[in-house]
Image (cartoon, rainbow over all chains, first blue to last red; front, side, top):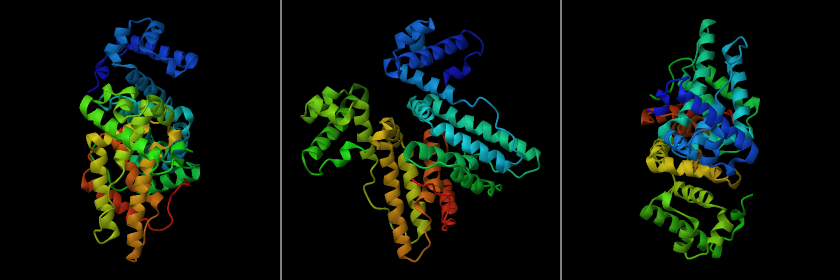
Length: 194
Length: 194
């Protein structure tokens, strides 16, 4: 369990997180990321370096945390009238954002954090929340909906795999074919316990 | 294009690579990875630090290179008599190796390298070589065979996604279900140009 998860929202803990994250983003834009150090970030954020070390452990973990926040979707998936259309639009946008230069950097940074701290898992949770929202809306229209773990396997995983490991053309034609394979799988389908 | 790719095999370049890689593995086992530095590795390998910097750039890139070598499969996929059985055995072993503590560390290290240098892509190429060998053998038995990009999407990508982003139970029951979905896809199927 990530200790940060139990921090009270809105309290001092949240204010520290906000000012430190902002300091990282500002200094990265001004000086480039190779110039970042914990003392520099702490000074800009108006906290002591030991506050940063106590909370994040080291610079790598802090950068990982900031990257995950940047990957948080800022809005609910758009309503295009059907499960297939919603998934197609979502997958196309997801592929575009994650395969951009900024997206790739944030994903790699997120993966640099200690896996025990769950930053990479938060990336996956963001996708799950969006896919669940699409599923709930589709079910409300009376549509059959694939299990969210199935959507991760068939739609999300190939995109992330190709972004990280295999230079590929992630065109809308490709993401649409992934969605097509997924919408045919509305019965109980491969999904590991997670 | 990675400059290393043009190094003559068997020459001084190969000897340097071998001794530096071995120095990293030894020192990591003796001192732990946090103690590694380029001067330390160079001294153990009997080369100058500048040789290491010239060839790998920095420690992170060197560790990434060493990690990818450790992920290289040491044998051809076993012959179990059919495409499905060969894929099931391969996927189960792949999931087991990659989700082990060592496997996870090597994958993360591989991803730490500069994407331009292609270390992550070499991981994917290893899987492709093994899947192609299974496919060639199956075709030799007269079996219909899915495209290798389809196998990456349906079998390999979900495993890597879950290992990196989503704590999951990667049991044989799960890998068998992925293989089952793939062997039903022997006609032209979703595959991006890569």
